[in-house]
Length: 355
Image (tube, rainbow, N blue to C red; front, side, top):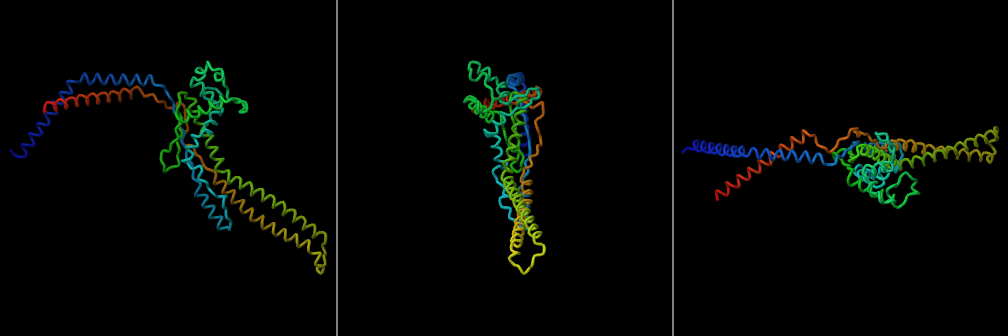
């Protein structure tokens, strides 16, 4: 038997086995279909009973001001001025650290104590909305210290229950409801997502948290340059006041002796002293003003640009599956798994027969 004939027999044998296998699966079609229907029913039941949760997402980008500050430092060095700490950029609040800032107790608790006007008309502290949405007051019905607890009080009137509850809520938000991530480590883009069963709380908390953290970030990023700017401005005003006083005094001395005899050297001393003071004050004032203008530019460039790309919009996305998608996925999964089960079962029987 030649090689071509052997290939034809092998191909024919393969097709016969495939035909037999397909026939075997077709004989089990009602079992396969029944399993698929069961999968669809279970998927629909699971989708119906699971708790609905809404997710609000804010995406924003942070501008890196490092290049601008380097350019300013170069210009300052050309002008003969050393910016030093004026242009120093701390890496304390780089975007990786901002992720932890969003999860900090200070930022989350501050957001919980933020009063927001919700889309349903309610104007209340977010912590009160969180308590109501979670049904916590019903759980505290038998605890008189907690059932009527009110966070809308001055902090001096708080009890230990206020602090402990706020700490507990902060942990819940951080571990169960808040997600802060970067889509790409190469980009300065951050996603802040809040997931909760209350759609309005999810949206309001997300907006308030982003606003609080970004405001804190801006204030912290510009605090050092702002302090330096205020000091330079105070020095410039002080030297300008001294310079004005010296100029006025010099003018009075010259007016008091308009035809002074140049042979009397001692009479020239007051005028010469004032001229030295004016010259030195002018030189100091010139340097301070030069540093002040550079500090203003540095302060403006040190202020980060936070640009919101996407903000949460009602209605929010939830974790419920679409009915048509649920049926399609469950049906395909059921057909595949049941067909796989009968396939493995047949292979096992064939293997046992050959032994």
